[in-house]
Length: 454
Ligand code: NDP
Image (tube, rainbow, N blue to C red; front, top):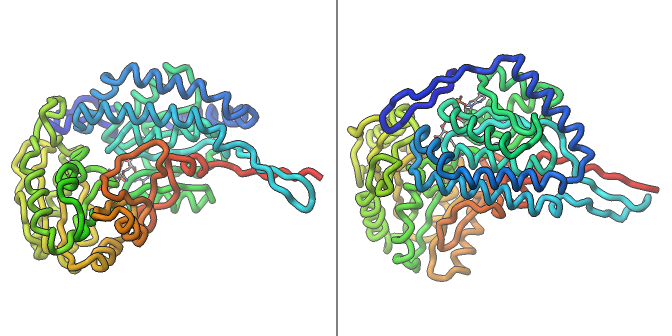
C-alpha cells in the first residue's frame, strides 16, 4: 500500500511517501515503552501543561493545518478550521479534567482500607481514517497522553500529510520523544505491532471490515481494543415536530463534511403527515448546495475524499435504484470531475433492497415514510448499526422517550448535535464498542489497580 497525497478536486498526485521499515517501527515501540515506564510513576497532572502546549501550537497554526486537510481530503476550508478548533478544545478539556477523572478511588473493604489507582497500560496502537484526520487522532491522543499511554499511529493511506502535520505539532510543543509517533506502515506491520508485548491496546476508527480484522488481531494476542465504526443514523420526525427547526438543519445533517461523517443523519424516517414537507426540505437543501473548490468560502459541498470513494458511492446508488429505489433527487450518473459528487435522495427503499442495510458515506439521503412513531422506532432499530441518531418532536419530553427506545450510542433530541469534548462518542452493534471523549473516553486503556492495605 502506498501513502499518497492526492488532491480530490483534481486527482493530481501531490506527493508519495516511503513506508517506514521494521527497524523504524522497532525504535518507535522501544521509545514509547521507555516513556511508559517513566510515566507510570509520574502524576497525571504532570502532563497537563504539555497537552495545553499542543493545543496552543495547533491553535496558532490553524490555517496552515486546515489547508492540509483541504488539499488532501477535500474538506471545505471553513470546516477544516473548525476541525482544528475542536482538536484544540479536546486537548484543553483533558488537560483540565484528566486528573479528576483518574484520581484514586477509596474503597472500604473487610480486609482494610483499599483504593483503586488509575495507571497507564502501555504503548497504544491506533489506526485512524481520513474523514477527520486531526480530530480522529486527538480523540485518542489527548486522553491517553494524560493517562500515560504513548501512542503509535497508522493513519489512512489518503491522509499522510495530515499525519505528519500532527506529529510536527506534537514535536513543536516539546513533548518527549516517543509520546506520539506517526508510522507509514502496511497492514502486516500493524499486525506485528499489535502482537508486540510492549503494545497493550489498539484503537480503530474505520469500516466494519477493518474492525473485524483489527479486533481479531487484538484478540489473538489478548489486547484491549476499541472500535469506532460506521453508522446509518436515523433522523426521526414525529407527527408534532416543529418543521421550521428541521428546515434550518436538515441540509447540514446530511451534507456536512460532504456527508462523510459516521454520525451524520443518513436515514430520514418521517411520519406520514410530514413526509412531503420534509422530503421537499431535503431536496431544497441539496439543490442549494454549491459544489466546488473547498478553498472557496462560497462552496458548501466539497468533493469526496477520493475518486475511488466516488466510484463506490456511485455504484451503491446504481444498485439501490436497480433494486427498486426511487431516485427522488439527483441522478445515477455522476458527471462532475475528479471526486466531486452531486447529491442524491433515495425513497421507496424496501427491506429487500441492499441499500436498506447499507451505510452511504457521502451526500446520499434515504427518506422513509412511516405511519406512526412505533413504526419509526422499529425502522430506526432495524439496522446493523447503532452509532447516533436524531429525534424531532413537539414535546421534548416525549421525543426523549422515543429517543430512549433507540438502540444506539447517542441521540440528539430536537437538534442535530455535533461533537464536543465532554460528550462520550461510540456505538453499539456493528458500530463498534468502547467510548471516546468525555469521562468514559479516558478509561478504555487504563489499569484500574486495586491496592489493599491491612
Ligand atoms: P477503512 O476501514 O478501510 O480505513 C480506515 C483505516 O483503517 C485506514 O487507516 C486504513 O488504512 C486502515 N485499515 C483498513 N484495513 C486495515 C487492516 N486490515 N489492518 C490495518 N489497518 C487497516 O475505511 P475506508 O477508508 O475504506 O472507508 C470505507 C468505510 O469505512 C466508509 O464507507 C465508512 O463506512 C467507514 N468509515 C467510517 C469512519 C468513521 O468515522 N467511523 C471513517 C472512515 C470510514 P489504509 O487507508 O491504508 O487502507
